[in-house]
Image (cartoon, rainbow, N blue to C red; front, side):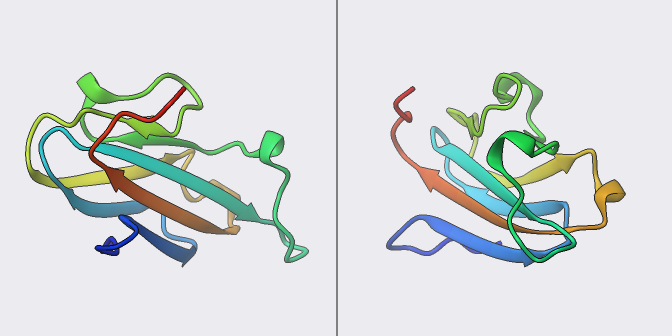
Amino acid sequence: MKLDKETGCGSYFGDATVFTVRLKEGAYLGVQMVTIGQDGFAEAFDQEERTPSLDVPEVDGPPHQSWFGPLPATKDYKVMYSPRASFGSKALVTICGRTTAPET
């Protein structure tokens, strides 16, 4: 996924569960997913069963957290959702990179 230079974010709509994004050392990565149900409407946020993860275990966020970082190196990172394709639903995924820690 290519992030927009101005906003630092990129969006995807479909059924993919793995995304690759290039980020710089020290960056923070934000991930949001909205599952679209069989009826074509967004599932309620508190009903979302997929959890984001990053392929850097030492940077993985707490359960159900959507921010990861600071990242240890400038490279391509893989963002995944689990459980993977077991839902058969499409989703709107937004991934953002930023240089400062998010407010909690």
